[in-house]
Length: 218
Image (cartoon, rainbow, N blue to C red; front, side, top):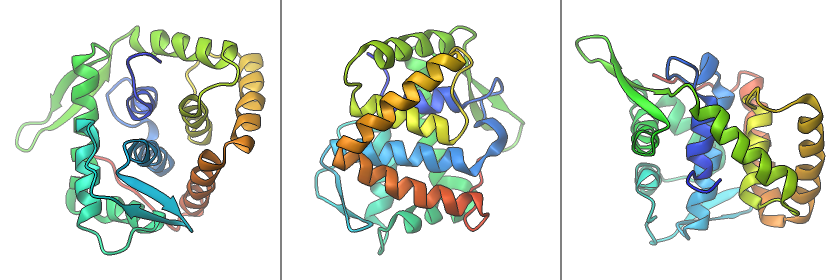
């Protein structure tokens, strides 16, 4: 997609009509952080090796990645589980809310969502998708996946994360889902860096589904 990063697109597709991560599902939080970690690696801010993440001194250029990068600099251990655990246990969800708020502001600037506050004292800010924003983004995403050969690593990762968290937009037909799944799976097998990240994500998602690792959102 031309104007959305992986993290922005995933966040948009995972939001429900009230501006919350659909279903409060821990897997959605894990997938969102996986997308952001990949983008940090593309910025040269982190590298992946031997089931660990190594931090560089190269801060990300993308503003929405700054909260995550700063949090990583405060941590002693940078395994995938440690990072996700930090976002699960942070007081009042501060780490996660800071990150998602940065994403929400970007989506608002690009015209995909509307900002809304719920409550009075200590009101929460939510980012509600515009009626046509998800179908429009999904249509562009489908063209990239169905007609680009091979699909880009970013599109492959986004599709994988949407599949794993059951956030694929209803725009896609069953036949399209099947065709894209096979196409993406084939590409993942040939891209070692992408395969490594997905292996890490699968390990975390397995723990989430077994209720060994829980996240809270808002």
